[in-house]
Amino acid sequence: MKNNNSNSSEVEQRVENWLTSIVIDLNLCPFAQREYRNNSIRFKTSSAQSEEEIVRDLIVELSLLNKHDDIETTLLILPTVLSEFGHFNDFLGFADSLLQEMSFDGVFQLASFHPDYRFADTQPGDAENFTNRAPYPILHILRESSLDWAIGQHSDTDQIPLDNIALMNKLGSVHMAKLLSACSDSDS
Image (cartoon, rainbow, N blue to C red; front, side, top):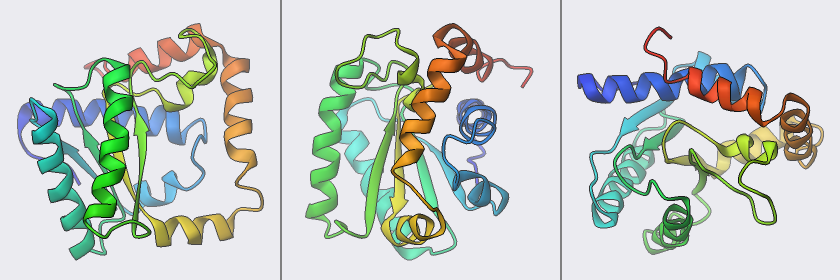
């Protein structure tokens, strides 16, 4: 489910390339392939130029998901804001608070991706950071009920992030940087 705007289409194509060639092909999220095949992932490029405009777009997307059960999840892509990871990370707390204010705590959950994603206690070049690196800053809106179902289908969800970190370390940061960069190639 993509926008028709040509600039949005290019951004969304890069994110879709990332989703298929990294998240799905490397099985970083064992639940993503099903939703991708079902065409129930909404790719939405935000035109936001400020945090206030991101909040507006996030409210719209949360409301849309709340009304449309056929949309499983939204990737709200932020190509023009929060390019500095520290600011992006700070914004996440505010975004989580918005879920509570809208009475969506327990209904939706946010996951986050960023080109410079960095876990606490890691160095910027550490390969494990690539589990959450994407071509653009992204707020991923997930349905809690679907997460509960998916967790029930998987034997050990606590092992998923550990396996992902091991895979990133095995592949290495140079390889992962090349894969991520390839997502933005216009030939993809």
